[in-house]
Length: 81
Image (cartoon, rainbow, N blue to C red; front, side, top):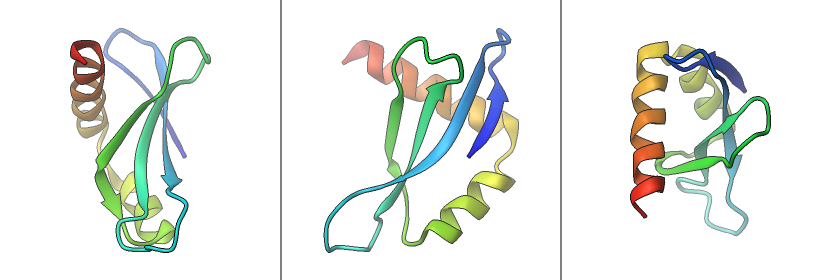
């Protein structure tokens, strides 16, 4: 789990979730949710990892700029859907 602020100052949490099932390839994916609990979470299911360890390491080393970009893209997709 990693907390970061968007450009407007709102806190968000980036976390790793796992899909249930027997297929372990690409089981873990990225979720972004507001830290204050106001609003819904957005799943970025196109960002996948095979293990929780790899997912967490990637999340820990992701730049804030990359997190902002992922958040902006996920929110705009959720609004247009």
